[in-house]
Image (cartoon, rainbow, N blue to C red; front, side, top):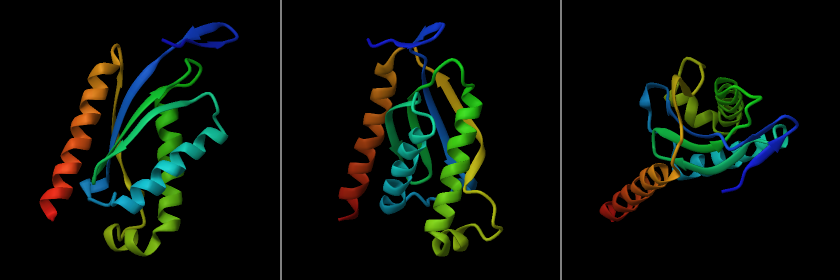
Length: 142
């Protein structure tokens, strides 16, 4: 177990964060989802001490397993990621997203689930089930 250090703190605060698309629209197609993961990783240019352990997507929601330093509030981290990804996805996929969200608002729902992790086994199992369900869905289409 790796511990992280700051000037006056030693920490490993892990969070499982989940948020959904607005109106639960199934907009996270494989292309948009891969671009979203790239943009989430780019947030680290501005916040290098944020650690993304795992990023998972389904058609209508996103899972993040993150390590957030204690100097940042979880709500500020979520707000920053949502704000940046919503704007860049709207710019990159304007034609598609304007058909789905005709009012020009954001693509993310306002509510978010964040859970501090005591054990990462639960999260790994949940993400594994999500990946397995995706594989089943992919093979059932064929």
